[in-house]
Image (cartoon, rainbow, N blue to C red; front, side, top):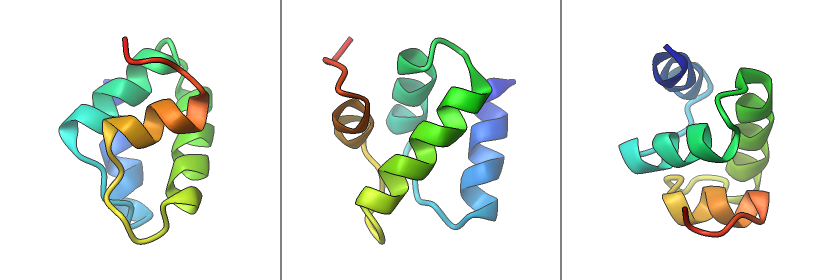
Length: 66
């Protein structure tokens, strides 16, 4: 699944992302894996060293909480 793939990428890249942030990422990217990877990369660079939260994903994409 997309969720499993994102979690695998997070683990491989040492990106800490909670369950809610992964779900938010899937939501804002409309299930598009390439868009999700790009968004994940952007969000993790902006928040280097921090655990990514749902708010970080929404801030990175300019989306409102859905």
